[in-house]
Structures are given as C-alpha cells and as structure tokens.
Length: 197
Image 1: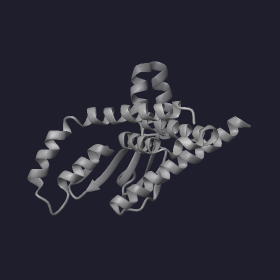
Image 2: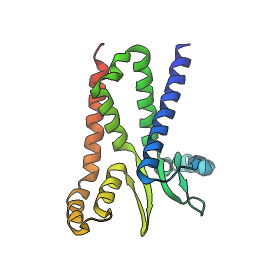
Image 3: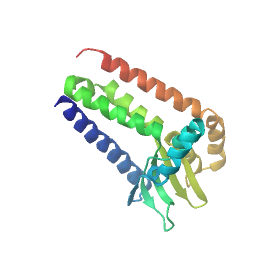
Image 4: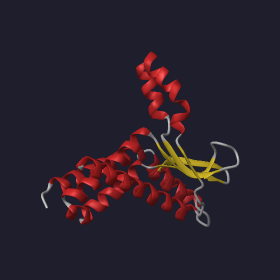
C-alpha cells in the first residue's frame, strides 16, 4: 500500500512539475502548447536492435533521443515554435525530484516548506531543462541557461553589440556553470532532506 501511495504521489508531482514548466514556457514566449509527443517510441525497434548489436553506440543513440516533447508545433511535423525537450537524463532527474518531493510529503512534510528545499529544487530544474525557441532568423535551442543568455543578448530595443560582449564572455563557461548549479542544487537537497524534522 505504501508503494502504491508513493508511486501515485510521485506521478502527481511529476505531472505538476511538467505542467509548471509548460506554463512558464507559455508565459515567457506567449505561445500556447498544443503538442505532447513521445518521440523515443518512434524508433524503439531500431534502438533495441542497435543496443543488442553495439551497446555503446546504442546507449549514445538512446541518450540523444528525446523521451518527451511538450510544445507548440509548427505546420511541418516535428518542427516547433517553442518546446520543452525531455531527454533520458533530464527525464530521470525530473522523476527523481518528483520522488523526493513525494517521499518528503509522506515522511517529513516540513522539509519541503524550507526555503533551501524550494530554491534548490528550482535551481535543479533550471539546470536540467532543454528549451527550443523559434525566432525570426532561426531557432534558439539549448539548455535553459543558454536560452536565457541568447535571449538576453538578442532581445529587441537594446544595444546588441554590448550584450554580445557579455554573451561571448559567459558562453564558453555555460556548461561548467550548468554543472555547478546542478551539483550545488543536489548537495543542498541532500543536506536539507538528510536532516531529521
């Protein structure tokens, strides 16, 4: 019974997290969401065959396939005006965060109300989300931090040259910054949840 309750709560919190991220995407882009697809299942036979024949190549191909895409589709299939891409790694982290929240609700509900828990959860989501935004001259795909930086540099009614200098200075360090935010958020979540409340 406890496993069923825990699983149900985990699924509920996962849906809540995905819904919140989708709502934030809609609010920041002004584009409504009309598509939810699971593209990894389109090539599942090929992936299974590849993993059997060449495990390493199969693993790399599996990691490169989005599990879930939530977004606003364009007129052509598989093209999006804006979308959230959930790859296996960040999907797993979303599920683990939902499971952590579910376990805290069941066994230590005071922990999820702590500012450190909320801030670390938001930092984790910021570090692991992959966003696709179509623009006038192409598209801006990337992790949330990359997308925010590109949007900052190319936003309208600003001096693009001065902002490009900031973009150039930060862009090379973006992967390291993302890993740092991910590590710090995981450490904070671990420390907050390790305490007895």
